[in-house]
Each structure stands twice: as structure tokens, then as C-alpha cells.
Image: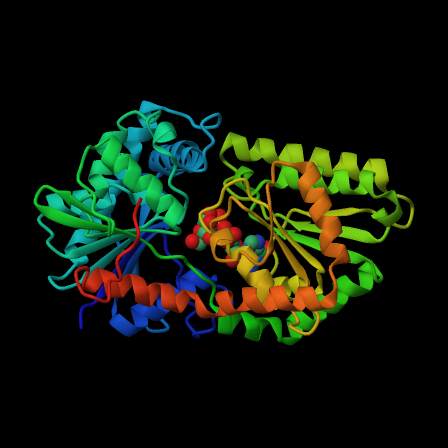
Amino acid sequence: MSRLIVISNRVSVPNPMGAKGAQGGLAVALSAALREYGGIWFGWSGQETDEFTGHLDVQRNAGVTTATIDLEAQDVDEYYNGYANRTLWPLFHYRIDLTEYDRNFGEGYERVNARFADNVAPLIEQDDLVWIHDYHLLPLASLLRQKGLKNQIGLFLHTPWPPARLLVTLPFHERLVTSMLACDVIGFQTEEWLESFLHYVRKELELPVSDDGSIEYEGRTVYARAFPIGIDYDDFVEGANSPEATAAYEKLRKSTRGRKVLIGVDRLDYSKGLGERLDSFGRFLTVNPDMAKDVVMLQIAPPSRGDVASYQQIREDLERKAGHINGAHADVAWVPIRYVNRGYPRTELAGFYRAADIGLVTPLRDGMNLVAKEYVAAQNPDDPGVLILSRFAGAALQLSDALLVNPMSADEVSETIKHAIDMPLAERKERHAALLASVRDEHVGKWTDDFIAVLANPVSEDAAPLEAE
Ligand code: GDG
């Protein structure tokens, strides 16, 4: 059997004792695949060094080998904080107003991708399957090909893919996308992002694309497909039934004193629609003064990418907004919004989800969104909460039994909150059962298996063809 080489910006080192707790669902699934196939997980350590040496820190923990490199401060500025998070992330989330086009960022991005290629290539053996992750490493496959690698190489993009009309604002966009075509398989979260990609390839690169999503390029075939990611369902449900989850559940229920609880859990990121969500909740409080004192919103928002100015800005904006809405509506015994700028262990989060009557998942644009799936998995099936989900999250395509909303419309979201509060138990159970079936069946282990199966054999009958445009 081939080994698997996973390459991503950051590497999640498994707990040496094999405990899953510290890793997220994606990391657990990739670690499981690495245990099964053998191989290596390669990426940046998260550490900075004065001078790049390419020194590999190789570790073996809980049956998984990881190999990491340190980067220079300039690399981190230009590649990670620069091109990845100030250029591609906003652009891929349709935010050209926040996209920064800076030549140094592009150069740093190419330099770090070349450093990845130089340092991972010697670790790759002839029959290894190579699986590259995300927008940080789009040109990596082509750099590996330049070194003569003939292996099967796959790339999975966790973010959306923007419409061609937005992507063409990126200088050298053709070069970037063409470099991705050095892969054998390119995976997207949904058919929607896949279609945008294929549209770009047809229109801007003028390459032939077949109905099954295959692209002919320089005498090779590249398969582009949708592989919707899921959560580690069994592990999450186990966590939701743990004593820590029960304690968190009770803490939240007790402190909210029988009120309806709405929950949001998001990295503090402008793509998650947090400002619009607070506005929508504020609208609900204003329009429904009779119900206002019977609801509480808990927003958990651990800070992320704090070195990037737009993230510092959104943090300030949200603090101001939450303060403003609380100031306008609170009384001595009740504050409508609990805005918490920190992270919690996963088991506690599961307890909070279960205690919440409504899950508010309203990103403005999201590749998939796993919080929506976690909220569904954490519910008590006999008395489940209601998921309110943005139509612009990739998850909306699978979770169509949620209450789907346009997160930009405060009126629509406010009305939907009212609808969710009033929803009878029978309808809640019916919707939840349908959502749960999807979250359970489309779990992350299936996602890794599906991707690896297609990567190992992209032309087999198993590689079920996709409907393209
Ligand atoms: C990218 C794409 C795609 C959040 N707060 C805490 C915490 N979290 C966990 C959640 C969830 C994860 O972080 C967030 O996942 P999302 O899917 O919502 O979003 P991104 O981080 O933007 O991820 C996204 C994903 O990749 C996978 O492909 O779905 O579209 O943008 O698991 O629970 N976890 C803990 N404490 C917190 O306070 N432990």
C-alpha cells in the first residue's frame, strides 16, 4: 500500500498518549489516515528562526510521524500574514475590499512554497500519495513537479473558490491557477466552488473541461471534484456526553434561568458575519420587546490572526457593537449578549451547544462551516435546538433542513429567530433528524477515505463522475 504524505501550513502533533482532546476533527482524521497508511505530516512549526536552515524537526507520536520546519520572520510576514491572510483569504471570501495586493507578499509566498518543496521532496518516496491542504500552498504541486516528482498529488481547498470576475483582480492569477494544474486531483468543499473553478479554467485559461470535471492540461488529466468535509461524529457525540460537557450544559442553563439561549461559536474572522449577527439580534430585541427579556445570546469568538490589521479592526468593532446593544437593552438583572473573546475545550463547547435552543451560524461566506455540524451533533434528539444557517456557508448545501437565511438581512434573521423560538417540538425533531443523518453519514473519516481513494486511482469507476456546468 502507498504511504501518505500530508502537507499543510501548520501541523497538528498528536498527543503522545494518544488522547484526542487537543486536536480538532480535521487533525484527528488526518492523523487516523496517517496511522493507517503510514507516512509523514509536513508543515511549518509555527516558530520563527533568525535564519532559515531547513532543519527538520521529526517526531513520532501516537503512531504519526510529523516533520516541521521553522520560518524566518519575513517569511511569516509575507507568506502567512501577507499573501495567505491579507490577499487570498479575503479574495476567496469575496472581500476584494479587504484584499491587499502587494508584490512582496507574492514573492514571500513563492519563496515559502519553494522552501516547503525543497524540504519535503527528499522525504517523498516513489509510490507515496501526496495530499496538499489549502490556500497557503496552491503552487506547491508545480514546484514538486519541477523537482521531478511523478507521484499522485492532490490538493484540497478548505475555503470557497471565488467567481472568475473577482479572481481576475489578482495580479498573476493565471500563473497561480495554472500552477495548481500540476496536481492530479483538486478537491473543493462544494459543487458551487467547483463550478466557479471550472468556469475560470474554461474562460480565463481556455482549457478543455469535460462534464465529469476533468481538465486536459499539457497532455495530462486533472480531476476537479467536490468532497464535502464533515466532523468526527462519533468522537464529538462521545465528547457531548462527557462529564465536562454535562457540567458546561448545566452551567449555561443555570445561569440563563430558563431563557431561550442562542449560541454562536466562531473564530474571530470577518467572513463569519459576526457584526451582522449582532445587528440581527439587536433588531430582534427591538422588534420583539415582549420576548426580549426571555432570550440570551452567547457568542464565543476566540481571536485569530491578530497580526493582521483587519482582524484587529473587527475585534474592536464587535466589542463596540456588543457594548452598544447591551447598553441599549440590558437591565440590572439581564444582559442580552454574552460576548466571550476566548476559546473553550471541545467537550465544554459541546455542552454549550446542547444547552442552546438556537444555533446561529451566519457566515457571509464559508467554505463549509463545521460549527453548524457540531451544533446538530450535540443536540438531544428528543428535544433538539434549531439551526439557523447562512445560505452562503458551504454546509447549507447538505444541511438544507436548517432554517436557511441571508445573513446580510437583519430583518430576515430577526424574523427567523422568532420563527425558531416558536417552532413546535414535532417540527424541531423532524428537521433535526434529517440534519443529523447528514452530519452522521458525511463524517470526516469518510471524507479522508473518499479523497484518498480518488487520489490513489482517479480514473477508476469508483471515482464517481460529477455533474459539471
Ligand atoms: C476552515 C474553513 C471549513 C471554534 N471556537 C472554538 C473551537 N472552534 C472550532 C469549532 C470548529 C472549528 O474551530 C472551526 O471550524 P469552521 O469550519 O467553522 O471554520 P474555519 O476555522 O474557518 O475553517 C471552513 C474548515 O476549514 C474545514 O475544512 O469548514 O469553511 O473556513 O471545529 O468547534 N474549538 C475549541 N474551542 C473554541 O473556543 N476547542
